[in-house]
Length: 251
Picture 1 (cartoon, rainbow, N blue to C red):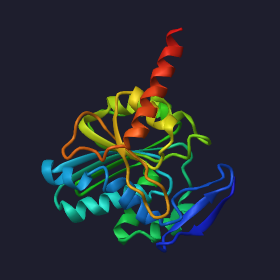
Picture 2 (picture 1 turned 90 degrees about the vertical axis):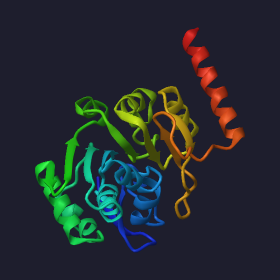
Picture 3 (picture 1 turned 60 degrees about the horizontal axis):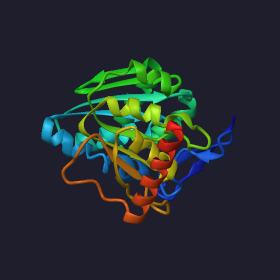
């Protein structure tokens, strides 16, 4: 399927996937979304400062933007901390297709890093250990070792790519998290939030990014400070929906 270049509002590039009928990033800004939707709410810099290391599960490598900004922000905010990232991608683009997006990253060394990762599916250098698993995420997740402090959930939408948004996959991700690990996603769909709750996550309100509505954050156990709470009315509706689903499953 053809992918059409698009310039987002913060000046960073993304692609429009004709087959999915969706953009890879928010049109408010590909780089803005990486920082504000994933890096910040997952508290990866804070974790790296506290522990001297951080381990991230990147679900949907896409154009490499979220992964690159994670490395950039941790190295800037917690110098000397080690970084380990495992990224899952079903449909890995060629280096030529990725080139404009790699060149737009804030540092040239990040482009070199991602080129090495895409070419060899592994990159290790100066305290950074990256692995790229290519294939169906619901199968590749079985090859991943536990201990993640953060998870970026960024596949195409539940309508276009439903499996990574369902409770079985989200339960697999939950089982890989360290205590207090945080997941962030752009989706605020009730079905996604219910699936997160049913698979053992505690959920909260994710940040609004640009013109996009608030997403969802989730934690593997309690966190300090607590996740931003959902509106009480929204929470009650989720609980009612879960109760109905569980009742149907027992009939």
